[in-house]
Length: 88
Image 1 (tube, rainbow, N blue to C red):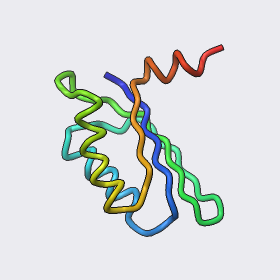
Image 2: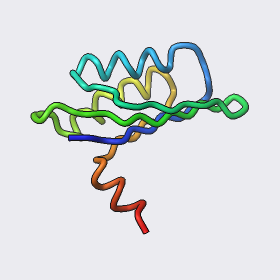
Image 3: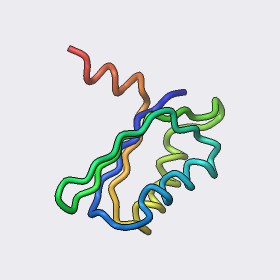
Image 4: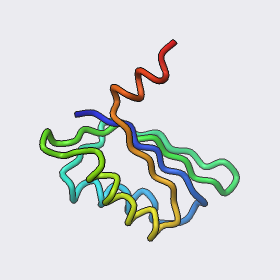
């Protein structure tokens, strides 16, 4: 299953490392990533693929640990849902 992940928070060293490590530990592949820094605010959008046996709630739960450790907001949603909500 494909999903879209958004990561936001105050910029600091190690954000990309923390997020990508947590994803790799769950065998989640990053297909595309876009990130920018606006003033001191870090934003990143990732297009990822989850193994068939992995459910989004389980991944979001693991990413909550990263949120707390890194003082971020991380959201994950199915690419199908993301597409349906954003199409006109």
